[in-house]
Amino acid sequence: MMIALTGTPGTGKTTIASLLRARGMQVISQKDTMAPYVIEHDLERDTDIIDDDAWADDFVPIDGIIEGHLTHILPADRVVVLRCRPDILAARLRKRGYTEEKVQENAEAEALDMIFIEALEVHPEEHITVIDTTTQSAQETADDIEAFICGDAPHSLIVPDWSEFLGRTV
Image (cartoon, rainbow, N blue to C red):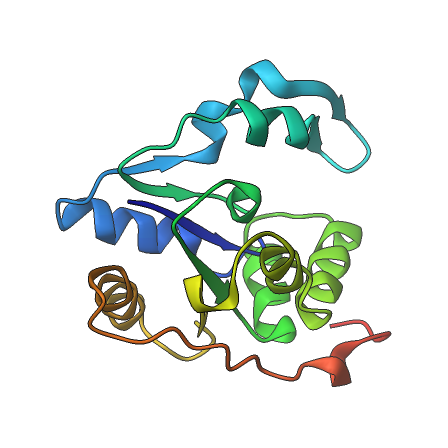
């Protein structure tokens, strides 16, 4: 079974992936699979532009977890969408040294539920679960994901309403 662990940058994907890996689960990063699909590097936004359709079409499913902010477009059996309140997300991204423009772009994407909506366009809702990492510990989040994968917890489509953050600097 392939699990997509996705979310806006800063929601906790890499941290949670490390915990799940330490628990013995196979986890790979989308970054390790995308090199052949990089079209160019956008210097202004400091990001790679990839042919995500070709990447998704060519992706060979794994038995495990693939972590990254685009993994929800892959043919996964289950999708875990991590969420984080936009102001907290912005603070996390600033600590990483993101430009203010990139911080605001990602905070707005989170307020608009972009990754969740994109996941719903590709996967049946019963295969998706949403986890808010704003105040939940990494261990609790990993526990929730493990329970969802094992079928011990139902999917949850409880989506926080962060529309109050739209159009304002966080």
